[in-house]
Length: 252
Ligand SMILES: Nc1ncnc2c1ncn2[C@@H]1O[C@H](COP(=O)(O)OP(=O)(O)OP(=O)(O)O)[C@@H](O)[C@H]1O
Ligand SMILES: [Mg+2]
Image 1 (spheres, helix red, strand yellow):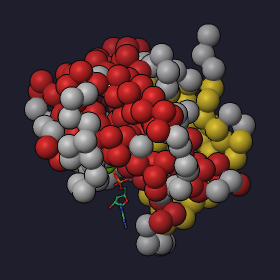
Image 2: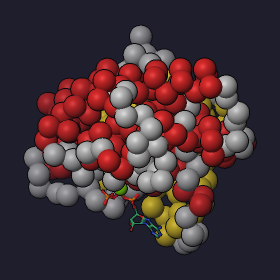
Image 3: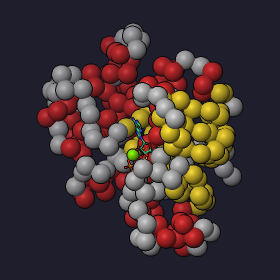
Image 4: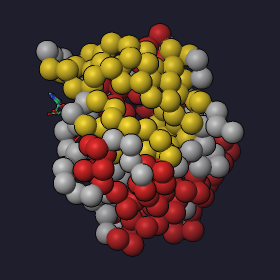
């Protein structure tokens, strides 16, 4: 049984007069991993930036349509609140360079002015680092800067920072494209493990990664959603010719 957590309804997204997402309708299932797949420039990043309301901060960025999180219209509430409910991790690990590992994890609270007791902070830091699989590696060095960590560790620190806000949805934009194969497979394992506690939307170029970690895949081409379905089904019997061409490497 699948529960719908997020509904994207008739979504158009623009940069100025350029329309880059065209009437997208997509439902995201709770506690599942959904891959957003498609060639460069098809609108993957724009789509997830619409979901957490970052798109409107780009010059000329605007949308039409609706995005509902559990039936609540995300465009009717405060953008800051949306970004707490929907966390994001970017392609390049970006821990705050002047902050300690500890402060990086609770950075969302610090930056939004939410006051926590020492006990609450300690608990959130430990829980989030355990969830992101980093606790054992950093528990002795919580007060060192996050930038001392390896690239893969930094990316898991960014995942911990997102999880610390207890988001309903985690958006990952090509989270392993700057990492080596070992760090990549650790993060892939983590994404699978996190399904117990969070819904994940993963943008990736890597068809193998989509196959390994995702339950559902949405294939985009030139701003349109071409096909959505179970990853295993789409990868064995794609319904659309375009999806098939992409999967066999003819396009993108
Ligand atoms: N800040 C911006 N201003 C104007 N146009 C933009 C901006 N960012 C992206 N675009 C355009 O919007 C379209 C979709 O871009 P987007 O970054 O969402 O694609 P993508 O699928 O994430 O690509 P990639 O796989 O290369 O990351 C492209 O045509 C791109 O040139
Ligand atoms: Mg992108």
